[in-house]
Amino acid sequence: MIVGGVNDPKKVVVFALGGTIASTTSSAGATGIVPALGVTALLASLPPFEPSLTVEGVDFRTMPSGDLTFGDLVSLSDALNGAFDAGAHGAVVIQGTDTLEETAFALDLLVRRAGTVAVTGAMRSSNEVGHDGPSNILSAVRVAAATTSWKPGTVVVFNDEIHAARYVHKGHATSPSTFVSPSAGPLGWTIEGRVRWTSRVSELAGVSVPEESRLGHVALVRCTIGDDDRLIRRIAELGYVGAIVEGFGAGHVPARVVDALEALNDEIPVVIATRTGAGETLRHTYGFPGAEIDLQSRGLTFAGALDGLKARVALTLVLAAYPNRARALEAFAAVITSLTD
Ligand code: DAS
Image (cartoon, rainbow, N blue to C red; front, top):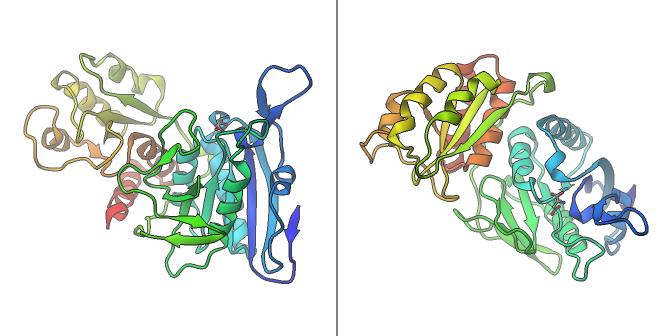
């Protein structure tokens, strides 16, 4: 579907994947809403664009975002790279909010083009009063169409705010202001159709787009008070190709699980992140067993400023993209370094 002028080279391609924004009751008397609306219906909710802007829609998936897979994200990044190569100035991805922070970070790693990718969705469906879908799509198109003197990469545009993919987090179960960046705050906002950038982020190191067949599963485990090492000891035998451990505070685990973590890391890469949801892991402060100095000396990798979900995205992609563990961990380290450079 094409909306707007066709004579101007500024084109934004919108990919629709489903989610609440596309949800409606499937038939009279049905219980609950389900993803059903395609990109034509979503774009029809917007006012007309100026003739200089062409907006092209693509139906990519129609599903709850919890059903998306890394295979879908690899296919989507191929489609986005293709859209940019075919002349798109920017792109918008519309999907469910539940896994939106993971999609956005995966695309930030995999879509290596100059244009901006703006990811959005809605917390209220079109059946609800105060549906936030149209305004979120409109803002996302404005951000994707904006000309910038730097490379924002992939951003999340929601509730008139712009967030960096590397920091954004869904922080509320139902609020339209659910997306927050606890470590850094938003990158800017949209107002009256204009885009305001108040901060920048460094350019993220990329990851080669992997073959879908090489994608494996990375486990995510959270340290909790009083827990033991039983789960950690089972991870490798269950076939996981890597593990993220969300440690306490700045990346600490109970002393009682350290030996199991070291043994697991001998089999598959183990990355320690912070379970706090903001900040980054320490490198050389605490000296007790299970703290960062001990864990690094045992060969474990640290997630730096990536939270557990984002670290899992990065580790999944590098393990699939590169031929061996050393090369994959080198690529992972490059991502971590580039975040805060
Ligand atoms: N239906 C959920 C999803 O697809 C929630 C949402 O979109 O907000 O993620």
